[in-house]
Length: 500
Image 1 (cartoon, rainbow, N blue to C red):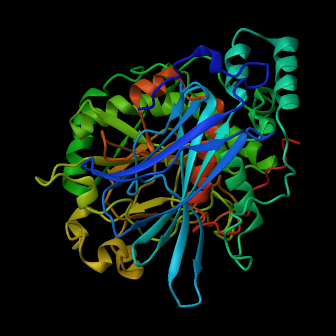
Image 2: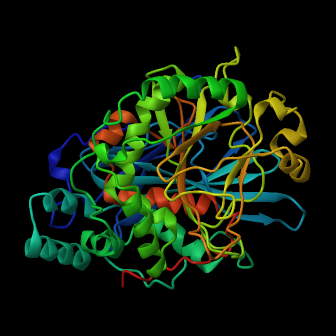
């Protein structure tokens, strides 16, 4: 999607970045290609923290189908990075804050990231009002110094790798971990949780201390690895007859499961994943940080072929709105990674079906420990009991009646390593762990869909096979935490000062 560097002289190595003068070009058009505006070139320089910010303040009033684009060029006009088209309906816009003006008009401050080649990242910050009038406020630029170190580390080991990590940390300007990232144009009265602000700051420029291989390797259990061999697909086979039967269940009931999958053939130990989640917790890191490890991405890669057969297409992508859970006995559902107990749909019927009624999006949920009725079982509302299954315009389609739905729900106990699947519009919820005599549920989940259904927040099979870089993994995790803040507004159980 993104255009590569056109001149290798602009790569950032161990020395400082050579460009002292750059121009940012920002434009907008309709989805049909009709120009809306093109700003005059904005001169920018990177700060000592490898960041720059350009104030735009360009209105996007009552325009549908807008595509934004930002391009950064050097003093000779050579392209450094290009965001490609960014639409207002992309799913990976992150809500940074919500507020209500004195006149009662609610608004949201939104941000979206576009990772480009060789460590460049472009951010668009937009203010959206409920009257559909929006303003493109800032385009921000971040240049990471870490990617080149990752590539170099592939050829090093032991003391040499440790020295390289120390060099990366030394060249990175550290921000105090208690500082805040607040847009200076926002009212001073705006209330943002300190951890919310810190996550936003780290999302824009990941701290090098959380990009040290030795840090994550020190937490890993059961020989989990970080940034070693790229994952390989197709190690589970097609699961033959089981897969055909499960597809029939999906068609009839809206949910199904795959059992006794040979994860060891793919180099994945489900027990090691479970144990590493426990180790992450001791460091103040929620379960979602398990996505820093290679074996998680290898596990997800194996599901591509299975999802392709179920969705009846080879053009499959995986959503990067990934998450992981680790329940605690009788704990309040406020810690990051605790239970989602409210019945909900991941997508509406129209969002995950063609006009002919063919399924285009599938939720996959992987158990990392045996799941029973006592330790946090998953529940679904079978499609034959869902009166509003194909009625997305009904207000209760997206806000189902909790008591009525739960009275008709079906429990889905399963073994460690089993994969539960349901149509993306199937109502589902999790139960709490009600006993301290059993191991609490641990699990993780994502969605697969036809190409284009997961919008920009997705990854293809080819891209996953090529490997997900360490700073990209961290940004995926941080973005997920920001997206799910409505479930965990206090970010309980999260501490990001562990790498100091």
